[in-house]
Length: 119
Image 1: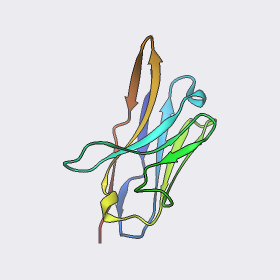
Image 2: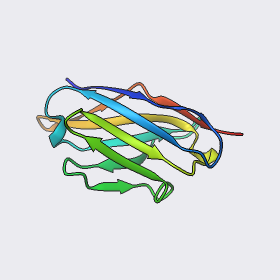
Image 3: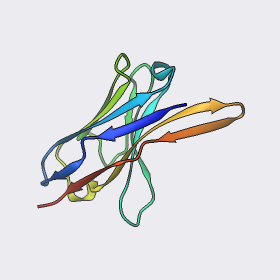
Image 4: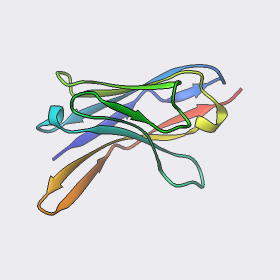
């Protein structure tokens, strides 16, 4: 069983920065990829960034050069450093991971943390 708890969201002005954190519980954290998603009002949930077990990262085009995903396997933590924030980054941000289960894949989500970018 995996539990994910996000924190670090808030209200920030355009051009500002926030650092989101995701605390994970459960076994084998260090061997699985982690991801951050976001969902804006009225829109579908979208992938923001991923990081593999060996810390290879990938980003959505909309956040490349502004966001950085990282992980600390010893602490079972994943982070999303967000710089140069824009109003269109406003969304609920979710931490995510997946686990194989037979022929299926189980997706785990946190409760989400709200990020609002506004004057």
